Length: 348
Ligand SMILES: [Zn+2]
Image (cartoon, rainbow, N blue to C red; front, side, top):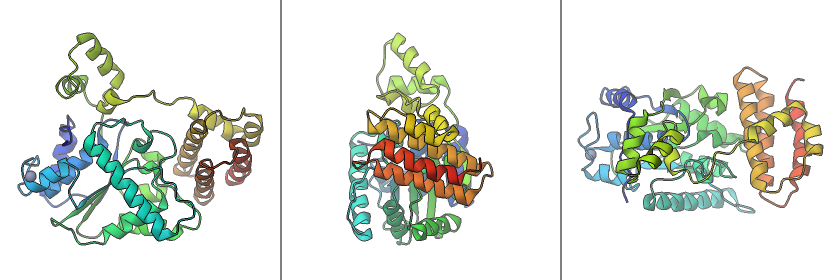
C-alpha cells in the first residue's frame, strides 16, 4: 500500500524543493515539530523529490523512483525508526544484522499499514524502542555505499531523541557526528525530533534546523474525510480538535503518556529519596517512560549550558538503566543506583 499523500506543509515544502532544485539543500537537517505533525512523511516526500526523474516543486509521483519511495521500496532511501531489539550475547556484527532484520520487518509493517500511531513504541512514543548503537553502525555502513539505483542516498532517522549514547561505544557515536558534520557528497541525512532540545548538543550543532509547524484544522479535517473516510460531522469535529494540528494524532490508539515528566522532576529534585520512597513500578513501561523523561531533562540541562561531559555521562547511565530494565533487574534497585550516578553528574 503506498503512503498516504503528504497533507499541508506547503511553505516548508516550497522552501525544501526550492533549495533542492538550486543545489543548496543542506546535507544534514533536523526536522523539528510536534509529534504526529508529519515530519517523517515530509522527509519521505523530500526523498521522493530527490529521487524523482522529473523533479520540480513536487515529485511527479509516477516515475519508478517515485513509486518506489511511496511503497517504501527505494533501495537508496534508508528509513531508520526506533526499535526494540533484544541482542543479549550477540557480538557487534551480529547485533548489526539483528537490527537490519528488525528494521526491515518494521518497514514492511509500515508498507502494509502506512498510517502508524505516532505514540507507539516503534514510533518513539514510549516503551523501550531506541536507535541502539548497532543501528548507528548499520547507518554508518550504508552511508559509505554507492547509491544502488539513482545518484543520491537519503537517510531518515525518525525520533532522533532516541539516538542513545552507550558506554564503550564512543567510536560509533563519534563516527556518526563526523558523518553529520560532513556527509558523503551523494548523501542527504534527515533527522526528525519532536523536541530539538532533546537531542544531544553535539548532534544538534551539526544539523540545519527545519521547523515543521502544526497544520490548520481545515487540512486535518480534509485528511480525516478523504483518507480516513470519517463522515460523521460530530466525530470529525471531535477528532480534528483532539489532533491539534497533527494528522498523526488521528491514528493514535492510546493516550499520550502523562505523569512521566512529573516523576522525572521528583527524581531530579531528590534522587535517592525518590528511589527509596517509590512504590515498585507495576509495569516496566512506566519505569522506562520515567527514564526517558529523565534523560530529556538532563539533555535540556546540557543544552542550557550545564556541565556537558558530566551530563552526557549521566544520560548514558540513564540509558544503561533503561537497557537493564528490559531484563529482570528490580526497577527500585536500578533507580537507587542511578540516583548516585545522577547526583554526581549534577552540581547541587
Ligand atoms: Zn517521479
